[in-house]
Length: 109
Length: 119
Image (cartoon, rainbow over all chains, first blue to last red; front, side, top):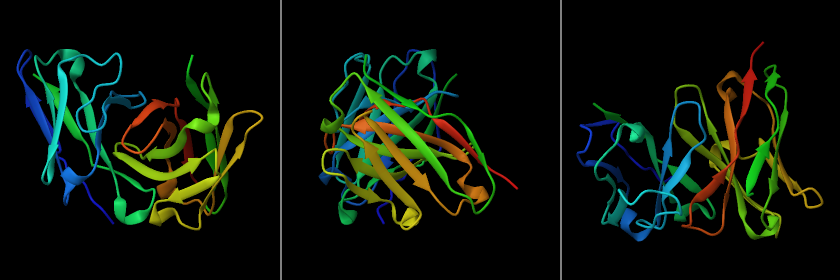
């Protein structure tokens, strides 16, 4: 089955840029989505179709996807951005299946 | 407003089955796929399966094949997921989430249902 790999943790200072990666075989050939999850809450979609932002998501969130790696970037990171972030893609080898990465804990120091 | 409302918490014994529900409102029920995703305590998100309310087709993660069934009630815009042969490892928060089409992402999530499997 298809696997997505994310670093367990990323740290950033307030106001700086945070980048987190998601790796998978030929990931650039698939659409990638990113979700933010804060403790005790349901996940929130922050990026879809690699780089598009849903309505209501701040412009500081951006995404890219090429080769084997997708990246979520948060510019001017704020304390409220501290959360777990999950990438998700479609496992084309298994019909309708979706797959999540293991998640990255973003800490804003 | 658009929302998915899930059923309440469940406590089950090993070997039992559980039925979870996810009631959609504020949008056309048959226009969106419905996913089930679970999260064990302290762990990440795990995709379980997808349900197409318009065609009643389903797809499951391989590890749940044979243990998961998904059905719908169009009169109440509700999707049900049955999980059988429960074991302690099935203890988790179970979410439903909608997606318009592949790549669009799961843009609306339910509040989650906690399932505890314990003897």
